[in-house]
Image (cartoon, rainbow, N blue to C red; front, side, top):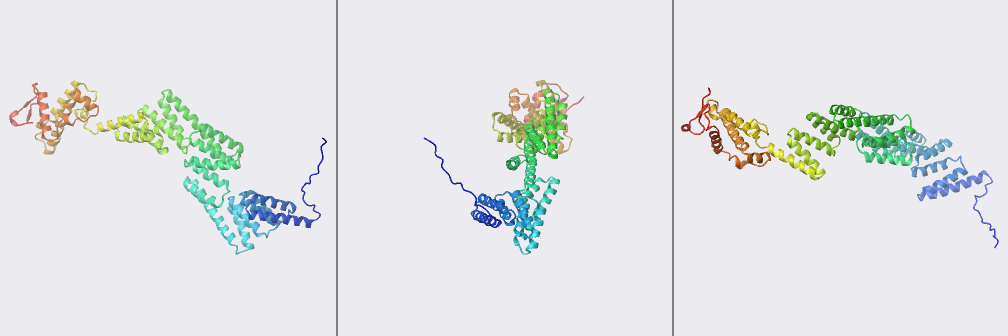
Length: 497
């Protein structure tokens, strides 16, 4: 069956014969644009205003209307161009100057905005909208000034505050958004900074400042390789971007120095590792997360070098930078254990166990608690002046020496205060010997068990126990003293030759 050709009518623009017809058509398009604008269908309004401009490109009001539509679509740069074209065509077009000022203000150019609002007031001195917008422009300039001062003083919270206020007036200003994002990154608020930078990159994937901020966040989160990629990309977009260049150089230097330190530590060259970590810490004070790790690494090397106090200080610095850094708490707790600062060790282990309830952490905490408990008792080894690995003979010799040194009869001519103190020490020496000379009691004592029942109750009974121990110990020897049993308990007469 043969195909049949069918003529289909095609919609065409009406034939325009003269300028008057063009102007009528342009007005028709403008009216349709106005109708869509009033219904908030800004895309269609934009289309019809464009048709009006195409039909009659010398009419200022058409550009003004399209500028208003573009402003509603948040396309402020295009709106600025239309506003400027409108006032070029008609310098007395008050709405054109007002819209140009608003676009400048939204884009963060307060001085240009101020000039436009001043022009409006020259045309219409009582224009309240222009008066208010002029105040807004002045406020924006003040926020910029405060932010610049805050950044110079490294008061990044102040800068974020000022930029939030500025963006309420200049919502389309990428420069303000970038400054806010950079300061958020410097404050360690990386997700917020990343979000701001990503929003800009979605609109402009070649924005070097936004690429720099993305890299900065990764750099400060210790993702140095990825950070370098963003810095390089930013420099590709803007070869003279000084901040990206400096950050890229710091990132590479920090990574290299840290890796050198780690290698030296693995090779047991702790002095070199300590020095390399110190050099790495000097590269960029702003890199909080990496510096926290470097402090902890240096603390580990310091502990190996017996620089325990410095190691504790380094761990404390690491925790100040990152209070969630478990490794730093563990390292500091171990240093506290090594220096018998058990209360501090318990506090750190409690922090760790609250964060990560593992069996290992629980065991560490229990051990610290036990050592703390032991440290609060009388240190019988210290009372006798012997080490914790002292032999039975060493304990006996120590008791002999200390008992004779502190026996009350040796201090009978001293003041009452001295006699009381020496009597107390004599009792403690007896207690210490009672426990440490008995293998079972010694084991219980070493394991942290309470021994109150093994050393008697407070009071005079302790004194008699101490004398009984003394008699039992010295009774079988013809030492350089005599014990006068008729003179009452505790009366010894020393005969030193």
